[in-house]
Length: 286
Image (tube, rainbow, N blue to C red):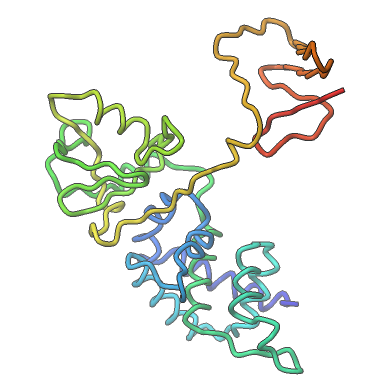
């Protein structure tokens, strides 16, 4: 267990990191990767874990600060595990201190480089913004290209990707305010980009080029995965339906087998007493 004095020391250390220029330099970019950062790090693994290029400076800064902090890796890991961050536990038990490498006393020398990377990701996830201050984000924007009165730049020739767009040999992550939903399941670009690409034949394309979200094209960040859960089980579409009552009960009957499907639609949501399939579809045969 980490005692009160150790906890205060650790939290003071983390606050110093969060208030540093190194952290502020990468925070908006890290938050724009729309998943927990430790989860993103896990996706980068092939044989060994690598530090994302844009995070190199902060990882080095965290390493130096931790070296001077008088906090042991063991205490830090215990603190991180106590936070109930499942990703920390995954990295700890699988890579940092795996059971098969522990001595009889339970001690194992963990990979320091990986430890610092995990610590950096943990700090980013801990201070991930839950309330977005639009004013602060706008005030801190960095523009290198000419903009109009709305802060938009002409980007004709832009190439849209699933998680970023390419312009002038740079990859810009989509802002956290951008709706990146796709139209079709396997689309390789967000819906708004597909509409522009397929339907705009002339005129200028304008986007907001915040340099805080830009990295060299060769370091482009991809993080989206295909969510196959949406194909588990039947889907019901109520686009043309109007439910004016607080609760609507629908029963479909197979005349040959006498199987029945009961659906209860309440307050624009539908449910029943049977467990959901992974897609959220509920089937009740009786």
